[in-house]
Length: 71
Image 1 (cartoon, helix red, strand yellow):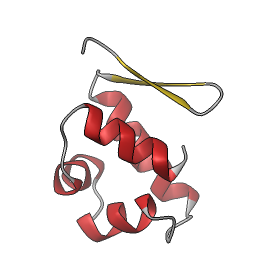
Image 2 (spheres, one colour; image 1 turned 45 degrees about the vertical axis):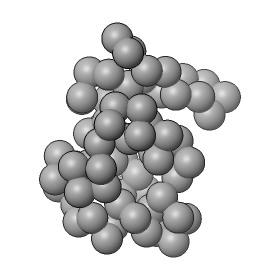
Image 3 (cartoon, rainbow, N blue to C red; image 1 turned 60 degrees about the horizontal axis):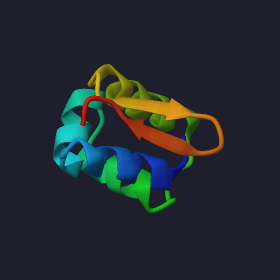
Image 4 (cartoon, rainbow, N blue to C red; image 1 turned 30 degrees about the horizontal axis):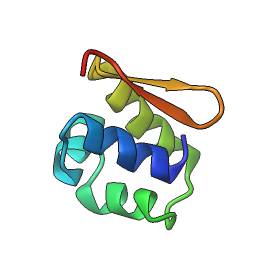
């Protein structure tokens, strides 16, 4: 997952940085760093992506796309 995908997915489901941090088990600072490209840890991306997918409203697709499910 790319930082821009994370930010778009989070915005699409109406989550704040703090919401995503809470659900993913990270800090708001970590989410912000990832979304601005300052945190490139694979583990961070995996935690954030998993949280967004588990919301049941986001699906990541090939070619760097994000799909909002059940808008």
